[in-house]
Length: 144
Image 1 (cartoon, rainbow, N blue to C red):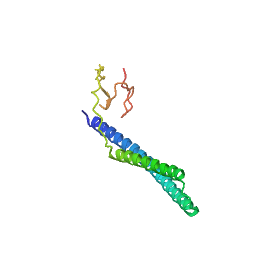
Image 2: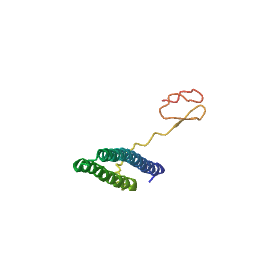
Image 3: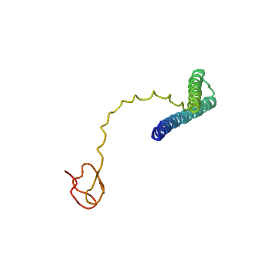
Image 4: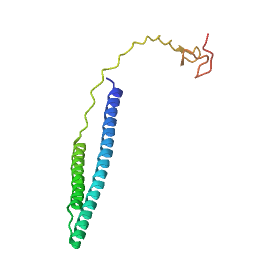
């Protein structure tokens, strides 16, 4: 394996982990937002339950069905909060799993024609590329 292959593998692994952590952060932030919203609704329902109970108390008539409905809503919100809290804990506990190495790519042999040898300038001896028409050093024509 060449240094570039090692570097590419390390870079790919780092990118995979970075993407995983970004998705995890996005997911946990979203769940935390949902928890915050549910807590607000729960607190609102509890406040409403308390207010309604107080009003009924003040009127001297605490009606059972009204309290049951509000209490049921509060219990439902508490159940949702507990489920979201478990979901958040699971999301926060997730760990990055290194991807398994893919099988090495097949190498196809490439037959290369040997490069023609450089030609020496007849005037100054400078080694000119085989396709040169003139010497880059002295300008003498080297092509025959």
